[in-house]
Length: 357
Ligand code: ADP
Ligand code: MG
Picture 1 (cartoon, helix red, strand yellow):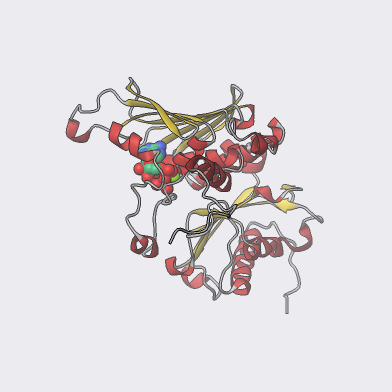
Picture 2 (picture 1 turned 135 degrees about the vertical axis):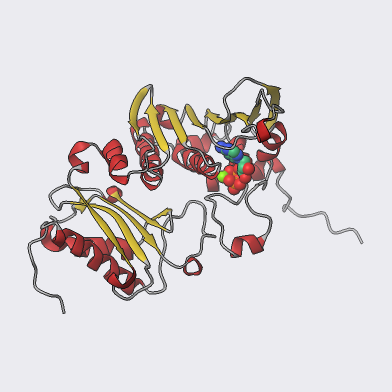
């Protein structure tokens, strides 16, 4: 029998669904930058140049020298839930090694902006099949242009007029300075985590920083934070038996002299298995190591890489959430505290303190 017709409940059209979904992934320019930089890293880029105008609200451009894409690839890349990175849930559960895997970034970004992709794959076996390269324009969820173009191998993605078709969301964007600060934080995080990739950030025509890509964390810190901070950093490098008991297998990176501190937590750049995360346990461990040597509400600089067994972390978290928790937060906190404290003590940067009970 025909269902009764007197209902207000109806299915949303595809376009509306896509724009609502986009809001979950792309909150602001920095979230689009994050997705594009992750794609460049996943493509094995050695150079990633990020250029933004007006805090990224006018234009975001991410250029890389990674694997690049063929015309077929570019067309596929902007479709919904298309990825080259996993095939099924099994792949996901056996542990993804790429930063992306959902296959929704390019599709969703393009549903709330005007995206232009120029890409050219690395020549396969010296072949010249894709000698030209492909330019694809995708705006408001629709592919409007696909044509051959001359471009270097690699990929350039431009995102213009973010939220032009979702005015309500556009209204929530903050000042240029605030949006820029978010973008800067994101690009900095990836630059520090990938010192073997040359990462640059340019805002309104002015270069903010550029790392060399020579593989040296100290050099990357110098490039992004400047000389004063870089010269105040000491290294942390502990693994195996030297670690107190707990889930962490190794901790390495750089932490600052207690006198070199800021009133914001944002300079605590912490990574678990290569992913930029925040975690109360890690932060409290770091802060515990400094003890009373930091004034109230003051935070050191720290760029710390923690390794835990693969099955101990769930990567299938919400794309925007960076907060992680460990099974045994207390143990992680103790491990980080001990490791950072011994690095500071070793460099004579801590007044000795009474042993804690
Ligand atoms: P995901 O990263 O989750 O796979 P995206 O929508 O971000 O999904 O990208 C879709 C696909 O497009 C990727 O799986 C990849 O194959 C391709 N792609 C995107 N950006 C790049 C890039 N910068 N270089 C090479 N390939 C890319
Ligand atoms: Mg991606």
